[in-house]
Image (cartoon, rainbow, N blue to C red; front, side):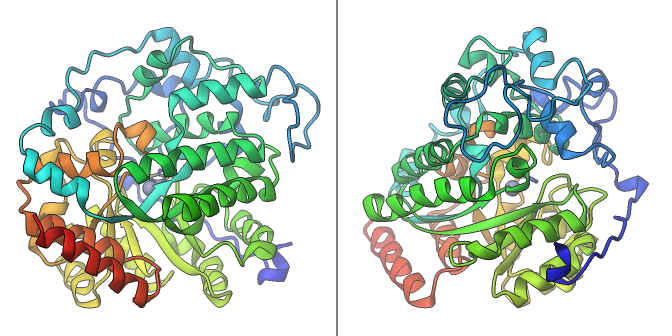
Length: 456
Ligand code: HPA
Ligand code: ZN
């Protein structure tokens, strides 16, 4: 299969011991985010360890929610009746179950969003009114607990929680891997075209409330095909909602297929092969999942092929991984923008290059906080990026898991970083000029921003 795309090119990912997941040191307390220090050793008994690439995706997916009955009209499912998507998995307790049993209902007090968003009504009103593009949004990360419950019921998938509140309480993470374990498990309720439509439509309606006019949505096909859900089922459902969103909500879109970087290069090539009949409706490729230990170099050839096919290219880099990964994303993958890019700030030469080349960084403030990439929202890299004239944008990443949509992210940093109105305007301008929209469309959006900002 991968031969048609240029053959097999397995190349082990470099693993720099010192760059293994940024585990929280014992005794290290991060005041702003209880999830950053409250677990750790205990959770590793049940979770796949950070950067551990020995377990397959099926292992990950098998953990949480066993399919107890075959879902009616389970389009694209080719597994046997009642068989869990990974019934061969031995782990007897899943991360979701563990959290449910632990009753992990941590009283977190006012969320950062709640704490921060009441301080400047005029600024918040401007944020609400400004048109904006969202460039970093994983559609599977917009699966709200309410929809998770509804889909579990519709599809006969059992989940180890008895209330939406209990699910939300379990969304407390120490690092990226900790989140990803739950994120992949949550996906297991997504089985039919209608499920993917419902998921995407719910996000679009919510985005419209925040005055989002353009979205560039990531999806993770490997998280679904590994469970027996057909590639077409996923894309059909997402695209149906996106088309409807364009027609009814006035939200334009691009669809970006991500490769899961903890999986092999061969598997990425196989995924690209599956996408070939859909290239008229997939606009770009991205790279996500466990960053440390899976450098961009691992996917150099598959990205070259994607570029050859005319696809846009972007990659998560410098979220937890070192600045070197950002260099590699630029040099080897030839990405058009960088998703996150926080740790690029550690490298002065890299900063200079990003500034000179006008590269867009898709920053996700509440995600950074919830995954302990930063210890406090005031540490968001957006402040330094703006000061360094880097082209930062604000995005929600996985809003259902990180406690806020795009305007929540804007409000949180606006207050914590004391952003001026001009800086907020700059951030939304960047979201359009950093998008894959044609120049004419970008100019139109910039004109509307100027109109809204001028009238403030
Ligand atoms: N980082 C890496 N992979 C992801 C993320 C993220 O923030 N969200 C969903 N997959
Ligand atoms: Zn992301």
